[in-house]
Amino acid sequence: MIKSLMLSTSLLLSVATMATEGKVFLETSNTQIKTTSEFYVDVMVKDLPEVYGVQLSVSYDPQTLTLIDQNPKIAGAQLEHGNFLDTKRLYTLRNQATPKSREVQYIVSQVAPAESASGDGRLARLYFSAPTNATNTDISIKRVEFGTRHGEKHIYRTNTPLNLSFDAQFSQQEKPTPEMPDWLLVLSTLLPASLIAWIFWRKTKSQRRPDQTA
Image (cartoon, rainbow, N blue to C red):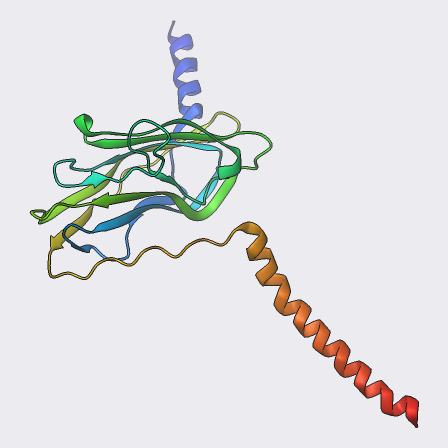
């Protein structure tokens, strides 16, 4: 009985462990928000080990903030996928705001042939709007667990809540910079190198002409 209990405990510890590598945190470009305006908050990751999926809960006050739906085709308010996981090979189990429980639940997993994700990136982005009487509120990560491709689970401790203040005199938050598509990013990287190679070729060709004439 005791041996069986020890074996079960050991198995649980090997499957679910408190993460010691990397961190998960909330970030926004300005914590002073103009009332009645729309703004965004990012869920960021840094120095993460290889993971394949995530279970995330972000807590907020639905009486102060309204989550802006990012996918009207699906019932309920949805947050926006980030760029950390492979969105082209992503299975969404749950992505919905539940005002009664004061949170947004986000459960997704990559699917084959997607490679494991690691390092830094944006896990998700939440868009909110605030009423005219909003003054101060907190947004916090209530729960975050990452799963690996081999069934291991990394649990992260929640960080300090992101405190936001509101006033009609504050400047409106700038919209996030649109992300480049992968093909455009590759093109922007190759184009300068191609241009330099072309200039070098033209220069070499022009230097050969006098020699051939002589």
